[in-house]
Image 1 (cartoon, rainbow, N blue to C red):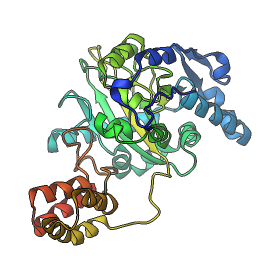
Image 2 (image 1 turned 45 degrees about the vertical axis):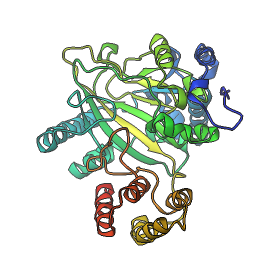
Image 3 (image 1 turned 90 degrees about the horizontal axis):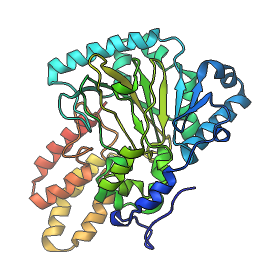
Length: 393
């Protein structure tokens, strides 16, 4: 069960987050009965040997039972699972690694390498949209790589059919520093202030809209810094409000666990789980993982709307009505919320990298800024066109 600490208003408050309640939650231990199909439980995290479970995935009833178990663990249990030998043949991993290394070298020459959400510039290498780039370089390798039954099964277990796969390669070099504890997309990519503007029930909804995964492209002993995890921490309902607090981050460091991974293993976890990449303390392991972020098919509107066209047409009208006071600032904000794109994703992160935080400026944010700064209509049209170009695949 989740901790349901919240204000009477239905909104979380950063200062009201209860470290005592959080500590009580993370004291829970994963029992064998919580993961009956698991090969073993390591440091509270169920581990599944996929070679032995391959027959179960080939049978509809066995597949559904295993998927139900995974979903239960991700939602109400430890919050993370390891699929050992998710790739039983690692030759395709090696082919993909060779392609990714060439992409990294080319991008480094072209633009200095991909910017990263959390690491300092140059501390690691990142390939945004590694899924599409792999396909462009080698359709055969891409098809073979994603023709992976265990990975598809755990994605469906958490998100249902129709999930949307994205991937970003991350390489952490020897000496690479650890990340600070955080939660992930969606609300984990918001500032604390932004996340607190969402009601508590949306905090509960956010984790079931995405699944986080990582495919090991090399052996990852603990000293190379595989992801630090805090089992059961996804159960703390106010975690998106709390994870940047120093006491919660200190608690994470005191209690987190790391599991070694071998090439071809895959780690999957609830995006609300407190986690962080570890420090690479080796001298010779360039830790490469393909980070998977899989989204629910339900994260889509019913109709397609050309919001750039709407913004271009209404902006001069908004300027005029604002000037004569026929619309109040709150009314203009309400109109912007309905007409402009208020979310920065999905986007092309090569052309539209995070700016001043974890996300690019939204169309709605730009519209409001343009009104404040008194931009003219031609400037608006040019900037909206640039934003559209940046977001294009």
